[in-house]
Image (cartoon, rainbow, N blue to C red; front, side, top):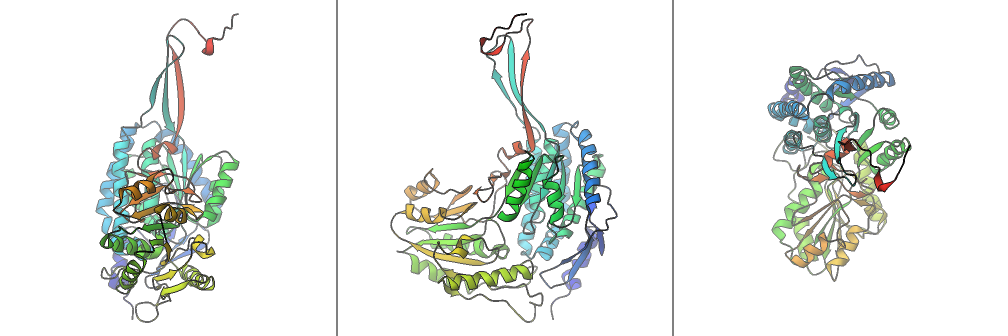
Length: 518
């Protein structure tokens, strides 16, 4: 028999995080609405248990949250950026207090390993720390004017309401990547989390409430609406939301981008990846193995940065394929809260069916199964969401290889000749998020990083495709959407830029030497 929720300590953390058996699905920060929408059951893929239920937000609830966000923005924008940063600093401190229970809830609701759940909360802490420093560095630019006695400069102002649509695979970090930056920039946020992971969203709102209440943050700065795609449609079409940050599938992103673009709003899109590692003849096996295997099976292959393809030079193909196949034989699949396991479950039965169909499609196109897939059954696997990490020898041209399947399926293919041939294969997919090369040749690494190299937003040398560091801007090109979150100057998307010209004389010279006399 599978471990019970009591055995896993889930009841205790739900209580600690303010989660009820039945929860409301809309909040403006301190206030929770009595929502009456469709009842959403959050079912853990770990054991198939219902974690809790949420009454979804209705269109009326959405409207009330937006109105309160508008009201809160009028006050929040008056706070100095360092004062807003201080609130975010305290949020980081609070997240450190709740790291263990929140990380465990992430693991239990989403299915990633407990270590990955803790890592996701650490990402939240890190981005808060980054945002605190940023709150004193929202720099503009001073320029010389062509007109005598004039001064020009650029400055950045808050946009207003930032709508956040997040995915199930990183149910808390992506929200905080956006909010931490948006809040120090002076924006307010309205979050629509994935309906597949709503309970972690409620936990985040409760943690934030503690900090906001202690600092007198205006109601409406942290809005939450839980529900289906209809809420995302409302947000995408809402002219009162100048920026929509959406993370998810390419299909979803295209719909959001079209709706937001039609009203000339701004969208930040973080969409699918089809990430490859190029393995060259000089690659170091002890680096390749952990990088490739974790990239492929971490989070059950449900990361946008998951390694989907290995492109291996023919001279070392057999050596590396044999090593990776042997490594797969050592993987332990099971309860993600058991730290002896490497791989947890997929998010739900729909994901399992997509995984099985992908394997069938690969075989139908001529792929060779090197490590068999399948669904685990029996004790400990009662949820029906545990699948076997699979390896398929394939061609890059296969339709299924061109598609991103959110599952632990790794496609392996061979290249010959120069590294440029491998780069051409890597780039020959619609997505452009993350990429990596394993090589000890500086010529190959520099070619990979050049303008003729990887066409992805992330290009790594001698590390895998998976994971992101807070200091760098995160995002990709092509059907990945082109958006950038997190570090570097990603903050600028959350603000509006304004050019100012000041005349400090008694004359009015016109630009370009134009004469206009009255």
